[in-house]
Length: 270
Ligand SMILES: NC(=O)c1ccc[n+]([C@@H]2O[C@H](COP(=O)([O-])OP(=O)(O)OC[C@H]3O[C@@H](n4cnc5c(N)ncnc54)[C@H](OP(=O)(O)O)[C@@H]3O)[C@@H](O)[C@H]2O)c1
Image 1 (tube, rainbow, N blue to C red):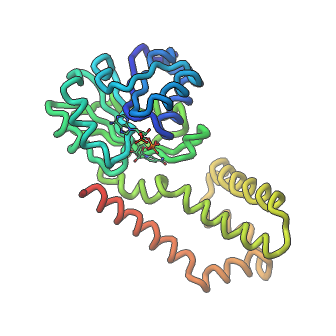
Image 2: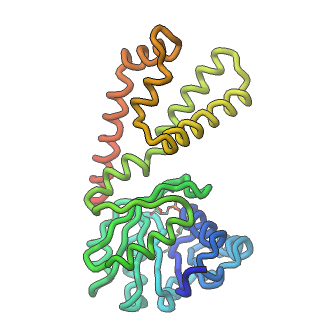
Image 3: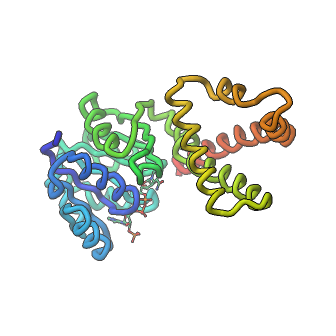
């Protein structure tokens, strides 16, 4: 147990649940000190029963919070910021996980010198394996970043970046899980064509991706070195890599990340 503060999550969706479940498991604070708000009472009832957290359909409960985590969809953020502004205490730290909503926008909507930390999490947070990047707003200090890190570290690892790097982070790790699923989809389609059963293919593909990630982390080697090590001259892997190169797959992936970054910039600029 490392925190005595009351933490309010505004918006009790998938990402908020993932983070809260990690906080409860890590004994970040007493569960009842976590308050989740949402527009869906049924959803809140389930979360209360599952995690022992406090719940409310009234976003005004943020007036009791030391930390507010904004976890609604970006589309409703404007309305939510307007709604909570009158209730927010001056000293409350605001952590936002909403994609594309700048610290400056949040600071301006909430008025005053608000301490804001912006976070880009990703979906492996659902299983405690998230990768989150954090950026401080104009008035947030080291202690604020540490608090936000402590929350996000309940569901994975964190890195610090400058806010202007968050569009690139979105393209890399925010959307990143989808690229890996896309690769697995293609591998499984090929395995099916080759006659392997779906169960066997899924088991082998999932373990391969997990093993690759662990090998890269544990060895500290670059992806290039590790790839070259499994690519013997004249072998099967070389045949596959040659085919990928001939189809321009690496260039296509690079282009895809640039497209994601551009889209993130467009969304941020409204
Ligand atoms: N999921 C991801 O992979 C991911 C990754 C990075 C960042 N994020 C960010 O995380 C945030 C949450 O994403 P999510 O996937 O968890 O979304 P989500 O499941 O849709 O959760 C948002 C929740 O907020 C509720 N809500 C709507 N208006 C509200 C209001 N005025 N007050 C309180 N609650 C309200 C929604 O209810 P209704 O459904 O009834 O509207 C929903 O339960 C987003 O801003 C997203 O950009 C998500």
